[in-house]
View 1 (cartoon, rainbow, N blue to C red):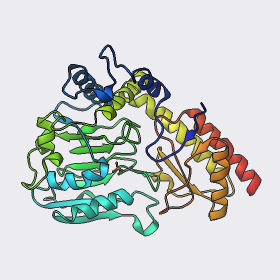
View 2: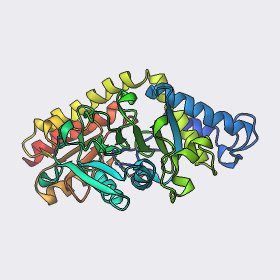
View 3: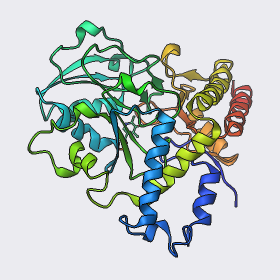
View 4: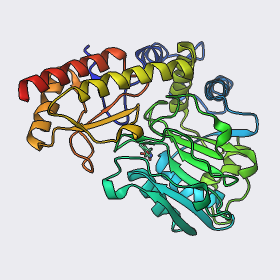
Length: 359
Ligand SMILES: *Cc1c(COP(=O)(O)O)cnc(C)c1O
């Protein structure tokens, strides 16, 4: 067996200890006589698995008691519709477009109401987080939507924006559990699992209780937060196995020391790459310094052939999936929680060598 360092933006690396535990329990979970994949979601064994996953996630994220945690399906993209369907009770919402996914969320919301573009950085190909003032938020807007970490462009909010009394709704798909977050500053947080949580197929939603129960009458039951919440995320068959793996990842985070500890490690990991890139002659960073992501590092040489050479030579050394998204070009190193420090050091070393050989 030879595992590579996988810098994929998602699905992405999982902790080896979690994969090993999945392997160990693959044929029989506990003394149940079956795999978690084969279990009824109504069984006692599975009930314990999902309850523990909820409880561990709440502890890790510091979710206050007046918030519900929901396990849903359909990826973060399904939330682009679920958010306006559930939360637009006045039919108005304000959106910050800081990248590809927030742009998609903005477009989807327009199907359901009056949507204002609060700020965008599209003019500079999303190389920074656009700013807005509290006064720019419409006081009668039902919510303000932002994307905290822009996976494709490699940018990240460096502070939670102040939206006054208007609830803040946030897509945290690519940065959830990478840093401590004051959940009480948000009305709702959602994240697709396949970056920092576990296998694709699971979407985690954290929502303040008073925001439940305002869904449009034509909201599909499967997208209705109240319905999902009332059914303890078992209105229908949940993505059972994905939740089981996510539960193991939550435990892994807790055993590492939680989000404060992980944040220190993540800052160190990102700093190693950014510092290495800044020292080179041939590489440029896409994101402006004050908007840099700790999870997705975007860079390029400015020469498409040289970028290809870098990606191919890195792959030959066991560092894969470094190609940037077509909207940015160049390279992207996604260094989520499960990317070991060693993977970042190896990549930094190769960046230096490649620069010396090609400058
Ligand atoms: C990956 C990603 C998405 C899309 O997630 P899906 O689960 O594929 O729908 C949305 N937003 C952000 C910030 C992402 O990183």
